[in-house]
Length: 216
Image: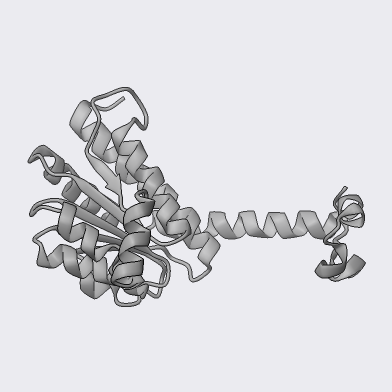
């Protein structure tokens, strides 16, 4: 099927012709290898859950004292921030009262306007300064741990008295030094790290939800 689709594709020439096709055995081997790699990383993640528990405790304390969660990141991390904010505002495992959370990449006008007027490095820091209050929790997501605008957002959060949580890859970059709680995914493969973000985010969300509204 893959070969047939490629043969009819107008992109065949730009993709390099038939040499880019894979036989069925190669396809299945590749997919199994990726699934195994993902499972192996999650197994390593399960060996140390202290960071996730500590992050959940920080979020619970903030919510109980009428504070909110502010999430941000670039690209796929921006999508993860939006996804996790929606889990808190909507629901995760069961119906309950909404929890205050927002993703800073969702306001396209703010992101593009700040980026145009001040520079892309300021797109999160300026929003954190405007929207954050002491006691809120800033959750920054960067696979490299060095994204300038994400690091700037963390620094702005600390300066404004927010608590800080970072999600990053195994290398960590500068984020361990910039956040109160830094959760490192045990991989340097971007795809595997991003898969762990959602797992860890869901685990933290479930801990928060069950603690505040009762286990189900």
